[in-house]
Image (tube, rainbow, N blue to C red):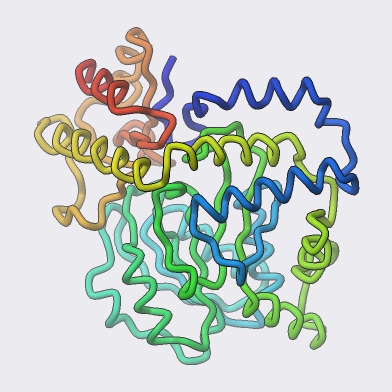
Length: 354
């Protein structure tokens, strides 16, 4: 079965081999205070920097999931106010975490399946401490273009800019001079089983966290950014991490670097164009927006006149599986992943079966 699901998704072709190597080396038993672990962390850190063009001004921390990072952001970086661009279920949940952690978040929301028109003209309160984007909304298949995020930072230089890039890596191309905080998990574009989150923060975030800690505002206990930073200096973690996943992530990213990020992005665009043209031209499927620029390149979402379950029943017989819609849209929409684990040939086969 080939999984075109949007997460967990199809495993990267070399994922199983790297996990087997990790088992053979008994990496599940090594201490996270050992030299073995430090070398694993350092290798993965270095490979991610190459692939994603992450500068030395930013730290790379590991957590259990991206959802955990939502909570860590509010506990470590927000005294009171945050602002959220909401275009689907996950960006809405990000906003909701602000209320759950007793902050005062505000939002600008568009209907699911539509993008933000004239984003640069949307007013954000001057007292906003952090502006949060879900750069690629997995539930609705809508993205925010990277240059528009950078433009918001230029308008509000005193606010931190945070990007959820969970279903956009490694395709997304962020200008990290304009991004203070970003994060993702590995079960989508990185083609791994779930269980590892990656949190990328800069000096401004560390400074803000230290300030809140000194003021006694911070609600975090063990998982303070200061603890992540202290341990990062020796390539360690505050608590026992998913060592094997960190190892496998480093190896998969190393494989991607051999292919080259330019090639990965070009192949993603080619597959997107084929998939978009097919869905656009088939009367069973319909996008909710006519603005192609805001449609995700990595997670395409369409309304369907044929129940998603019925489609999958026939697809499964041919060795393919796609995702249904999210939540209440489960049987009314389809979602198709376009991650590096799928090549052009496999995408073409899926379209023939569809």
